Length: 172
View: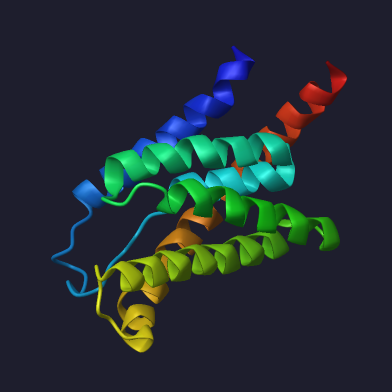
């Protein structure tokens, strides 16, 4: 049963992002802002820090492909960006101390990298014409605030779960 726990959490985060967008009351929020929940990649990044890097990169490839298939029109964007930011996170965290504050900052920086790369690809293929300042104001900052709130809520429970699963994995 425990080997199905990580895929189950990843699937919940995957579908939770779309459910969140579906039921987000945009009338109360300034409607020109774009809030992008990255619950799945936050889970994968936490997995790379507290569980196992290679497993997290594999999840990045698999769920990046699923993310592209379900949510984007261009296949391959998230397929390569998810494992890339997962790899960057794991390498940075090998140098830094992995407490929750440092991990949260590193995850938010890597979410910024993810958002910027997606913006650049959309700019390159002509799907957006936003200037970088407009992108930062309308999409990057609201997205980072939303995901920081999610990270604050789930980081400690996920850290304890992932560390417990990592300990059990090492014992087997």
